[in-house]
Image (tube, rainbow over all chains, first blue to last red; front, side, top):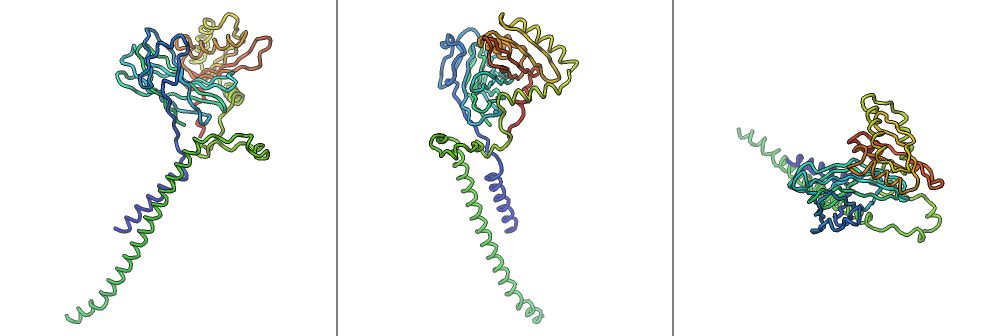
Length: 153
Length: 207
């Protein structure tokens, strides 16, 4: 009995030591949708704010661009939490990175909500060069809502 | 029979004593291991806290560092993400160009993609812009364009790669100016992955 207990403790020590020394920690940052702004300033009145989320209350699709804080350059996985009651209220987003001179652009594939009636994550890939900036552009149908953006690296 | 009992009576206390000694030793080992486990757990927590705090701390200003130190290359931003450093603009272009040149045309995809791209580009290129070359190979298309001014280039990028209603298709892309503008004219190169696919440079893991 003691031996099996000792083995369990040794296994736990090994696990803790491995976690502490070997595995890289996945880091994340969250950004409220309210940090973003419409691509066209004239659409500012189309986005209605509610606790940091933004809903397109106009009759046509509007583009919201959310800047993301970059801690480390390179590849990032981005999750946009969004909501659409139905297909007519869909939200599609794409990530894009820009160099600091704003002369080169890295763009990812755009993805859309695939389920409706509840907030779900849209998963994106984004690349940002050293010293550059990273954004998410969301094409928001009428009554589509963007809650927030989570970024992992 | 009595003799047999006597035979047991002699070694039994000895065995019991040995067992108790061994048990005591095991318990002390157990206590020691539990102590080590607690210490390691604390160390792990401390390391995580320090790492998180270090990430949030602003970097010291370069001016405050001694010149000798300032001249040294900057350390890796995060040792937990050791790996090839992310590529800058020229490195990205070089990698994509090399990858493109290594590829052969995909009979099924590249021909059709090239026709689609040509048709859509003719519809979205600004009047003062010009398509200089277009070629599609196995996993991507390479598009070279000339623009009269930065605004035309920006309009081209937005329409060709970002606007869902006008873009060529939904693929990962990279685009850049090849040279500094000459008399306002700038030449650009763009790489566009297949529909629904990221460019290899973006998909490549950095850690």
